[in-house]
Image (tube, rainbow, N blue to C red; front, side, top):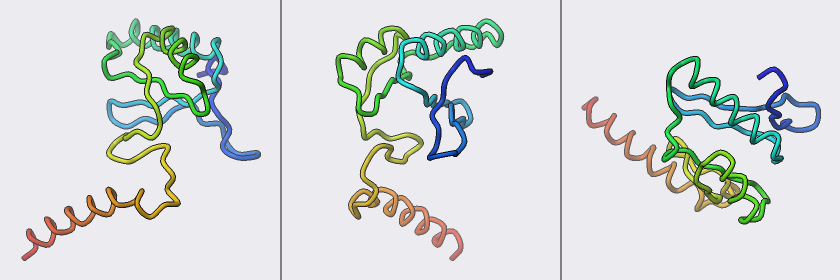
Amino acid sequence: MAGVYKGLRCGVGGPKVSHFLNEDDVVFIGEWEKENVVNLRRILQCFYLVAGLRINLSKSWLYGIRVEEPERIQMAGHLRYQTGSLPFKYLGLQVGGNMNLIDAWDPIVELFRIRLSLWKAKKL
């Protein structure tokens, strides 16, 4: 994104991450500042103008880590997105939960148990 959008650095000296892509989903990760949000909105507008694909605002959410709700709501207003809170699910996995707790892994273990059961049934 040519320095227009500021992602987050992963650890000391690690790479900067600005987005994750999966099929028709994208997650943007960036610094929490108004200029960054405005630039993201501009990038998405350019994407629409070039590709002709609209952003589905009903499926667009803004999350802030360690950000107070009024500030999160104000920033979401700039993008015209809904606000969400942590933890949330993305691609079936919990994001923002305490994965050090055994209970946090229960949905993932259950999903694997079901899929393994279906696989075993097919192979019999």
